Image (cartoon, rainbow, N blue to C red; front, side):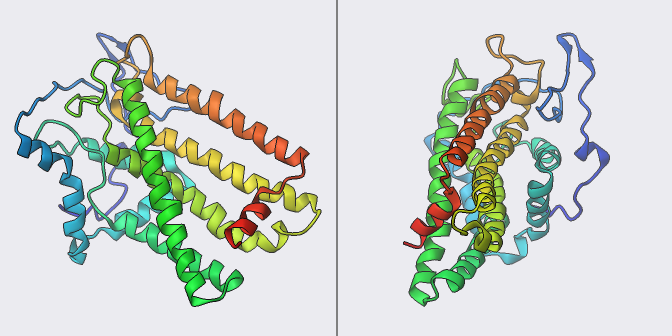
Length: 312
């Protein structure tokens, strides 16, 4: 697999232009939904009865990642760093360019896979979390065994195990929501892979790492001040803000899929991008805002309580 040495490639990668009109109607961008990277034309559904083919196809990306893990020359850290940088400051831009590029990479079975096949991104995020755990351990629990447990907890539990649970839930929910007729049929043109859902979690988790593992660490002396309104507002805003932004980045990730972002193709007279927008904007974000306000009124410092429980 060749490396993408220069990102972004062209203006079209950053600002892909949709076809202005078709015989089915015009394409319009939603208010929060990202611009469709290209006009989506449904692909035919493929059925493969070969058991060996199904098994190989299911674990194809996993095998690629494992092979590249033991071949450092094939790892593309430059692209991973570019993705990390833009996921933190401008996730919409990253999804426009990266997933537009992935859309052009046709698989042998006729489907397009958006799942990562390069472990460079995971290696970097794991490294960031490990460094953060060491910093937290040296500051608040300076023993080798405690630091080792902190690394395991932050990396394995906070990132990977939580990601597996979230990816499984979103995988089931999105395929039920946007593949009403075929459900979890992996050979459907609109099937969302589990690996893609896990990638979306990894992308969104960068905001959690940045705010709760780095910024909170720097501001913790202020956040833990007793009976301080500034500490209360700052700590709770960090937690609820990072969680809210996690869901916003998750929305951008799923909305980057062409069959979701295209307003031409609708499932049962529903626009998938509009459904996602309503779930995030009208559902999750208002609940987080209400929870933030309630914790302020009750003088419950979420950051201080979680840090105390984290370090026992």
